Length: 275
Image 1 (tube, rainbow, N blue to C red):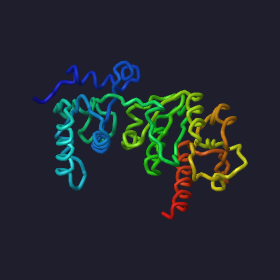
Image 2 (image 1 turned 135 degrees about the vertical axis):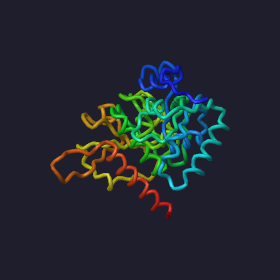
Image 3 (image 1 turned 45 degrees about the vertical axis):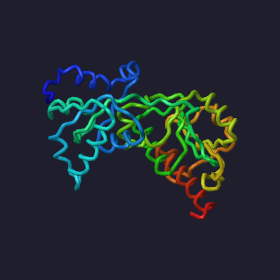
């Protein structure tokens, strides 16, 4: 049976999950998009419900669309999720992206604490303090995935980690990078106990980020664009570094700054390992 009414209770619930209060009350999140859902399933996340719109799927521009979506459909069926086919107008009511591709899931929000993180011998971590914009947090996660970090610690978040726009901006990296939420003081103590050097990014630092040693166990701490890192991190950091600004603007977007720091760390580690 195809759901054709936007007043269907399950459709209305999916729409309500755009609101943070509803997501937190239900412990659920929305995952829209083929790639994002595929990564979520590969990570072991098990959606409760998956909405599928065949007419939108057929309109995808992917060069191997049939095989592409058939594979995801098999994965969705194997996950045990309830599969619901919906009409185009209904799907577009639920969708939060422009040009939806016909896939939308409701899944448990996989909230992690610091104890859930598994660290390598020389871990590379990102500490994102009080990030306000979902798009920035999503972009940080995307860079973190590309750089191969051990995890991202979101401290005192001003935005919901499971905001649909975090999923969208991360392109699904929310499901490939271990993300833990913690209060700042808790995260600081946890890092100290594990001998992880805290490197704070701030325009006021004297040391250029390319001149700092980022090869060992390191946590790169970044803050908001407006106020930067709080005194908690600036005062307790082992090292403060800056990204040189040669124009008239005094700072970069936090996601861009994080990407630069991560790739410098990855470059140094690659040289050390001979990669």
